[in-house]
Amino acid sequence: MDQGRESEPTPTGNRTTVERTSDRELVVTRTFNGPVHIVFEAWTRPELFMRWWAPKSMGVPMLSCEMDVRTGGGYRVEFGRESSETWAFFGKYIEVIPNARLVWTNEESEDAALTTVTFEEKGDKTLLVLHELYPSKEALDGALEGMEGGMPEQFEQLDELLVTLGAGAGGS
Image 1 (tube, rainbow, N blue to C red):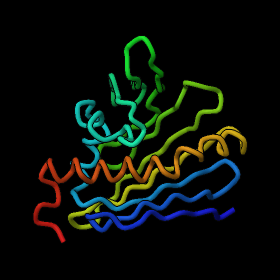
Image 2: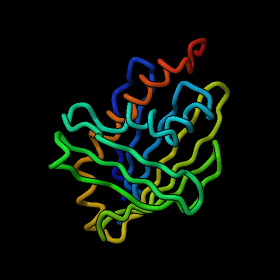
Image 3: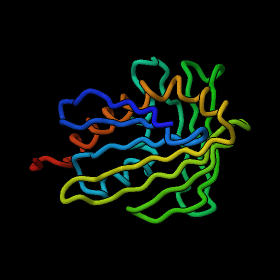
Image 4: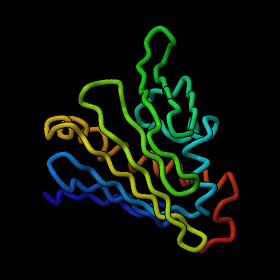
């Protein structure tokens, strides 16, 4: 079941590992050059999230992002080239532990995953682990097509954003 892929090193020296750990589970791991509180903010502040989440290579910008980041709160993210042709991802936050853990539902389809993201401080860096649990093997199979290329690109964009926020400026 150990179908893993590791991205090439980026200018920051970080790699994204995408690993299928079971028929229904995917784990994505990356270390970011920046303290955990700044990385967590990039995941929970809409104005920051919009700057890195949509892979630029797709050519489909994020049009809006609403986040009520608290246990029981919701989120809605819309993508598209025009407001008349958009698609949305939305769900609820099940668990929010500031600077440590986010768990949310993805409710846009019955094949969507339950997502857990953990943030672990490693000196001046942050180890991020994203875990997705899908309702079936087929749901994960379908999601994998876009994730293996898209997730590393998204995380590279997050690295770039962290540099602009001053994270890791004096880092190793």
